[in-house]
Image (cartoon, rainbow, N blue to C red):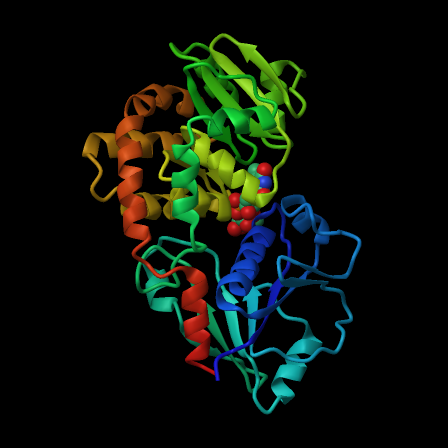
Length: 381
Ligand code: TRH
């Protein structure tokens, strides 16, 4: 009997990706697999930021078919589901674990890991981890870019949706208008969603001195220190912009998750970060730059390099070098390396754009993560 009920547990570490991935997965499990899904989350405000119809003051609500419950301690007694997904190793409530251990038929217990392109992920994906003190087994489930991983989140109709959106000649103008962005004329549009980055001010200088108009679209609250430094304290508020030289900085409101997708679809280059926006930018096929979550002793650098190694297969060597150089420069945020590497990267955007289509054609051959998860769990019930 296939699983019918899933609990997804999400602890918001910081930023929005923990909630972003959990919410996206929960919605897809309901919509495409007809499952009863409860999302237990410890920070409703973070979820409400990316899903504005969530009431941050209500501990128990249903939205998009997902039951959303505030995860509080002590944890209330609940009926156990068929599957429990522990997002990013967030550690399940002890009372819940005790109930699982006492159950005659415990739920399948999944630890949904962080996304990485590193080779070791393939050998770790799907491994059982018997628990030392409880008669329970937890399974490691790794997202990834190859058939020997759990794949990537991709809802049905995503590719068709943006192909349709892009086929509508006025779609970008309509979106810009809704976001309060004046027409960027014939330049390029760059969306900027990154962590604090000291290299941004020199990159803004380079864009201001470029030979084409550049529209940089920044969701409110992103890169505030760099914007403050570069604008001399005049950071544009939402739906306002500031132009210096050929650069126009346009601040937009922080968008609902599905609206943010539309922004990514219509920009020429997307600077993204963390995990979820990094994946969403890939699906658009457009050139993107990944600002990875910085880790101590540069441990994040190998993750970028391993991703680039996979992503750049089939890309002209010179183009790949320029893209890698800009990516690594952008992630080396203590210098003006990104400003210096931008012109060479800018010059090969058409080739990177064509490669993005090939990359998506490769990725869409993989099963989507939600389907992989459902099959994995049904095989272990
Ligand atoms: O917010 P992030 O930096 O989250 C990261 C990741 O979770 C990462 O794995 C974790 O280690 C780190 O936090 C602590 O980046 P990410 O993953 O892109 O998540 C952002 C979410 O916010 C994503 O679902 C897209 C969504 N979003 C909106 O809904 N509206 C917006 O306007 C923007 C800019 C993003």
